[in-house]
Length: 196
Image (cartoon, rainbow, N blue to C red; front, top):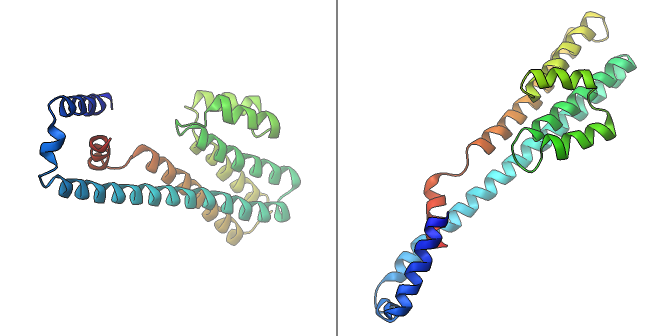
């Protein structure tokens, strides 16, 4: 990013020193400016679309947690329901902490875990041995679901529905990771650097 800034500053200094600004006023440089402005607007539109898509995915995660929680508290034993809800919330939080953005394990997960007891020390130790993945926590949800079905707390239809909701939540978190790991195309970033 410093190279385009350096080029910009150099060009501005040279333009003022050799009075190139007056020469350029009589050219068709405004056509290039209009072209670049068009791509800037297109880039901003794409960035906004990405933001709203990621927001929808985050809301989908919370919606599925609410749906699963409603079924769990009415069908499961209190202990099993509490554990499943705890794991879903932990998977959601661990997922955000794994995005390498402003939410980290230290400033996000550990504070929420301290306040809401999402995971026990033993569960955190298991995550530490397995690369600290939200997918691991979701696998615990699926395991608990299987145990609850085996104990007769839910039937096959309810088990399939909860499984579908958990898979949808897990897929939404994976899609958020996809958006973060695939930034806007270089073409647009290159134009932004040239415009600045």
